[in-house]
Length: 154
Image (cartoon, rainbow, N blue to C red; front, top):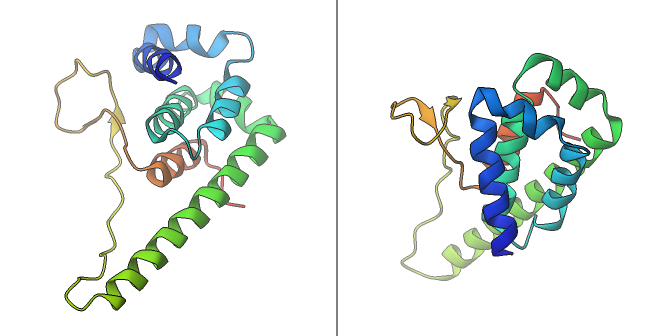
């Protein structure tokens, strides 16, 4: 699992730099392999899942690559089904947290967090305030990916 996490981190850093992003995308079956890894690590490794979402969003942010990714029906269906599963899991966690808060007398109800600001994804060495380096919430990362590719939920 650590090896996969570091491999995805290297690919993510390569994709953040414009001159090497095409090398990551042009590798044989790179997008389908990343989506398969995404479905495998959906529940197991939050860091791996969010980094793969960010990587796919960066790769899909360029015009012709976005069109190629959106034309692949299997890819779109798989991303939509993963989004539905992650959204259902998130709703269950929120409901469970509310039930726990109601049963305990002095607990506060969980507040709704606002999504991250839309920012340009830049390499870690770019020190700008509007840079987005990483998203930690799996639902926010997956929503960022779907919004980047202009894919609606299932």
